[in-house]
Image (cartoon, rainbow, N blue to C red):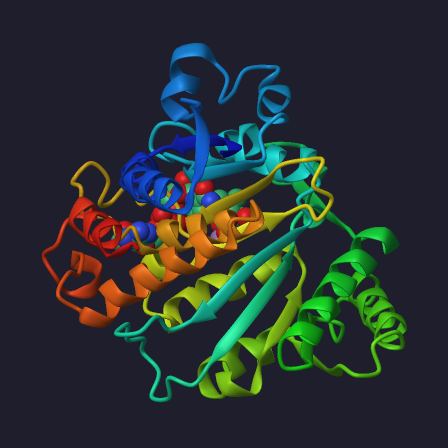
Length: 350
Ligand code: NAD
Ligand code: IPM
Ligand code: MN
């Protein structure tokens, strides 16, 4: 049988709840489709930080490296550990160390799901740059705590980084509708974003079959709500992509629906799959988190592992459960539990 090594990082809050719910579904998908998932669980989290002073061990990245993929729940528990510590100690270094530069976040309504928009006609693939830009971590503070305090956070955009995310976007656009939207704020940010516009134009020359539109981040945010059907592949920087994809999650019915794939197309390093949402401390520990985003992320992981048939059948089972509409977690106005939804998806798998 085919075997795939998968690292599980359940993390904090609802992270372990949605990951545990997905395991039963993944095991069943694997056995039905004739492969095995060798899963290793890592307890890296804020609890671990409070116990050991580290979110993950010093050699954490090396421990993950041999896996074909990573499935992550969520990281962060701001009441106990500052987000700047927990995220920079676990999630962000994984994306960066494995050069998972393309964060793919599809936004569309699953059957039966309802979002806040009048029109349900949209199918957007947001491609977020995932390793540099506003998340570079370059900066500092001086005169801390005094009236003269200054804080600087520098965005770093490299030609290599900008070019590869745009090329990745153009390749995806070619496979979809042939339309690409490039997102900047080049009316206000005159270095990085003007540079991004120039690189967009250069790369576009290699893809004459793709129609390119350029939008400012503010305008495309409004467009995603007012006219989402005019958008297909959307390529954005790290921070702009982060913001747009919570908006995308909202229009697809809420944070419980939005999946993501942190991809390094060079398969010598693991890619990571995780819901767009966070650890949701406000509902954690009650078994009521919506597992759909994580199950969809797991389907994206199966695709990435080359198990496309299993990925398709997982997404089909998930769609069948949402279409039926009988099982809804409280965020969807229902009373179902995380495990009820996951079990129904497992039962639907064929
Ligand atoms: P959040 O996404 O955790 O929660 C926002 C709101 O959405 C909350 O009301 C929450 O209850 C709801 N929600 C989110 N996922 C849900 C689900 N599956 N089912 C039902 N409701 C859901 O965002 P936040 O509150 O800003 O962040 C909480 C913590 O998570 C912070 O530490 C933050 O830094 C972290 N975070 C981590 C990730 C990640 O690990 N990828 C992503 C986002 C936020
Ligand atoms: C996401 C999250 C993270 C991000 C945070 C928790 C650092 O919001 O995956 O969207 O901004 O990338
Ligand atoms: Mn986010």
